[in-house]
Image (cartoon, rainbow, N blue to C red; front, side):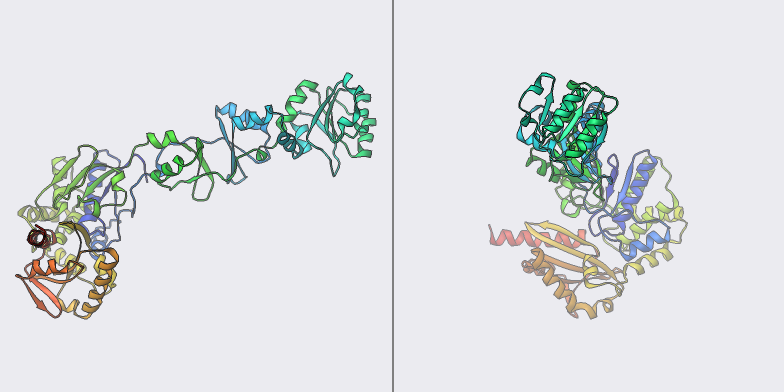
Amino acid sequence: MVSSAIYITGHKNPDTDSICSALAYANLKQTLGENAIGIRIGEVNNETRFVLDYFQEDAPPLVYDIRTRVRDIEFDDAVTIGPDGMLHEAIKIMRANKKKVIVIVNEKRHLLGMATISDITNTIVNETKEKDDLIRQTPISNFATILKGRLVYEPEVHHMNGRIFIASFLGMERDYKDYKDRIVITSARRETQLRAVSSGASVIIATGMEYPNPEVVEACKKVGCAYIITQKDMYQTAQLVQQAIPVSLIMTQNLTAFRFNDYVEDVKVAINRSRFRSYPVLDHLGCLVGLISRYHLFKHANRKLVLVDHNEMEQSINGAAQAEIVEIVDHHRIGGIKTTSPVMFRNELVGCCCTIIAKLYGEKNVEIPKSMAGLMLGAIISDTLYFNSPTCTSQDIEMAKYLARIADVDLDSFALQVLAASASIKEKTIEEIVYNDLKIFEIEKYKVALGQINIMSIDDILPIREQIQEYLDNFTKSNNFGICVMIFSVVDGSGSYLISSGSALFIANAAFADIGEHRDGYLFLKEVMSRKKQIVPLLTEAAKNYRSNYHS
């Protein structure tokens, strides 16, 4: 996802209006120069797929969670070094890039560890047994490399203990046992070098020399003592040898690292539990892409979100509460959504959200593209059941006729095709039928689920009555719904068939008692087609009456 974009989404379990509203409104904003992207929260149903295919438009990308991810925010580039790199190299790289942290990676940029400038300088400056052990593990070739010298001879097996001795001319008068297994830094004098070799030194580093002494070479070979020559002086040599330690020996391992797709909110929690200042960021292949710190996490902006065809958090995309909701365009009841700042809220009493979106094109003086007109027309036909729903208004009808002209389609013929696609449930599973257009509400503190799907006639649902009832019973128990109603609306506008379940089923029974009649195991509500305008108000009134009568 793009961090600077405005994401436009409809509700979960999207219907045609939800999908087409997101696409059409994103198109309008793009035309006006905004970086808008239409997205969806669920799968595309048959009816919506028909409308999209008819006008050769792709479904918007599927997104399950709008929370900001690590990849959406700025983080620092990381300076790196291989595990065999020396402390001297690490310091140079860090200074050149003005960094206090270096990351150790392998040839594929897979994370191995990290080291700070403090880790490195403390290792060099402090005289400890641990430091001797680090030098003992350092490849002898590193000493020659860092001194820009020459490794004249290296035995197959060495006995270096990691301790360093500077053998000045006067210092050679002392007990030679002190040189046993040590790294001895000598002058260019042949006698000094031979005395160090004979005293059991493990490595001789002869300073101020351009060419090796043949006699010393032979002496080293006899006793297995490494021999290095360098043109640097003894002081420079003593300083640099300690910086030849491989960075892998002092790096911090078992780090807390984050992936590109991790959510920022989760990263904040993890960082608050740890002590480091910088944390590696890895891509999906586990390769290092940068470093993140507390500073980056707390200065980032949340994703911008526009809600269409809904305004309740329960129906919206996961993470909507952590996003910056900048706009809402809807035609449903206002469900108590909260925003952190004022937003543009367009809510109109029409049968379809796309009716409002189409009006916005006109208000912005933007010509509606043919394909967008077709998508919005399909949404209006779907949401109003081709003007048969009680939610349909004269605005929906006039807008549908206007869009049909732009889309260059015969309204009656196209409407029949849309409704036929919406009413086809033969190839759907029971789960797909229930989730086709499922919305979650809270009514008088009851958790309510209302699913709706169009059918051609009761013959479509007679064979699946028992399966639907069983699925709803299990569904309500596992999700703790007080009321769950599946609504099968006949596309000719004659009414809807209902099956209900839930611990508060008595409220649903009371809501529909006066207007329903039982037919073949279903409750039929004559001329009831609208979930939002007819079903929800009935349930709300019944729930209020129950609370008033029994909890007053």
